[in-house]
Image (tube, rainbow, N blue to C red; front, side, top):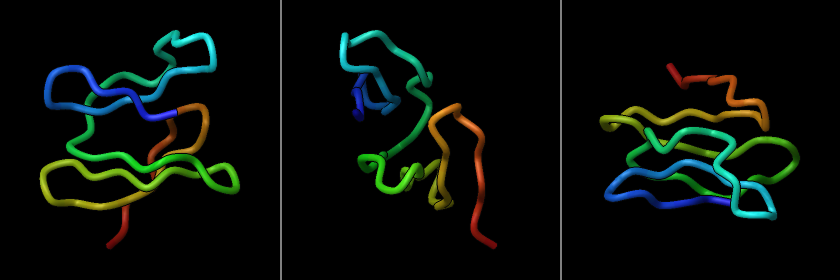
Length: 56
């Protein structure tokens, strides 16, 4: 689930343990193994391991 730390977003597991660092300007919940994220106006997706896939 998305987790907010200050003004950045990351993701935590069901036990509220941070599993993907809070480095995103915005983050949406995971759906079908991917979550939409934003960094500095650039949008992309991350998988549950934190691998980033940026839109061109």
